[in-house]
Image (cartoon, rainbow, N blue to C red; front, side):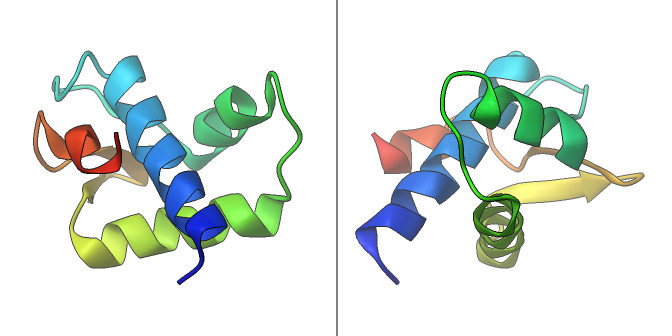
Length: 80
């Protein structure tokens, strides 16, 4: 896996952490993740989708009714 992919995965996880209050009970949708990642920079949708899928595979995110939340409140620290 490339450094760029790892960085994108980190951005996805941090975005979810930030928008759910670092592990709160709320979840964030794929569309919301895309909006936050593309707000200041342009990322290909495929890269965001791949990062979300990889984060789910790694167990960094959990799916809740089609939305995503952090599996742990300190998940993002792995990417800092």
